[in-house]
Length: 201
Picture 1 (cartoon, helix red, strand yellow):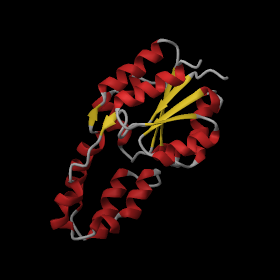
Picture 2 (cartoon, rainbow, N blue to C red):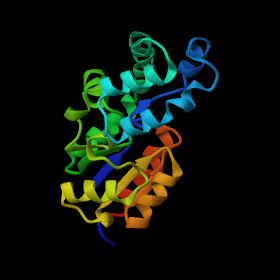
Picture 3 (cartoon, one colour):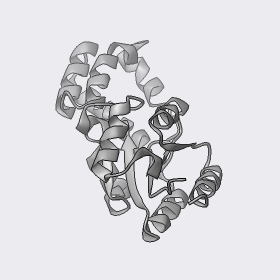
């Protein structure tokens, strides 16, 4: 059996606790019923980095017929929900494995501006060897290309890695490439599952 040499978690819902804070609903009286579906194409572009954050603000505001400043105010609320709260327990576990010699990386479906805000909030760059953000590489999970890019940058074979995500299709895509994968439900369960995999080494 090939030994696992790298641990690769997701951010939102894994390294960050990101409950729904009702941001969309709070802005519906101002933006109109179903407004979030009208701006969905703009947000999809932001997730793969084909437009800047400023362009997101401008295009979404134009679509909704509101001043740019109002959409920027909405985005201020979004970022609070987006960065969530730090999962210190899982981060400590992950950091301890790194100290033992495991490589660490992150694969995250993200949004333009996320690196700066998450770095300010949580300092992920201090915990990991590599962060692969969808908005920086132009592809999102569960597309195999984003996992392959991460593996290439790490210099790892799929069988040498374990991926952790809170969305089963993303885990399935990793397994299809030959990676081990843990579906995150809560921190204690994820740690148990990781320990079980690492003890097979």
